[in-house]
Image 1 (tube, rainbow, N blue to C red):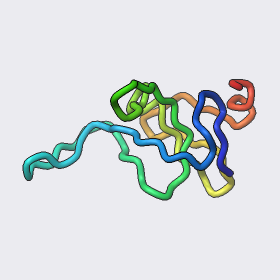
Image 2: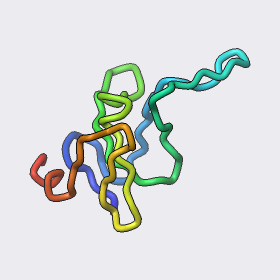
Image 3: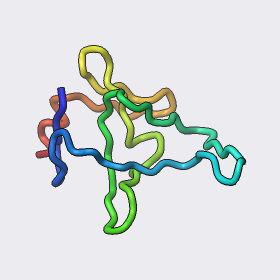
Length: 92
């Protein structure tokens, strides 16, 4: 299920999201306490947008919720904040 709960994004729109880490000049940088986004996976993301830069997670651990097989957001292991679809519906 694709849905925008709040903001100006449109369902189906590609949104570039920057994250810490990556490869630069042959050196791999990894952030110790984050789980990188996986392409073609579902997420609930809490983002900040900027005019000339990709969107950024508000927090690398607490602003990214992978969706389980039923489409429910699941917190990352380091995240103690749980979010339900019913709570997300109230954000609009």
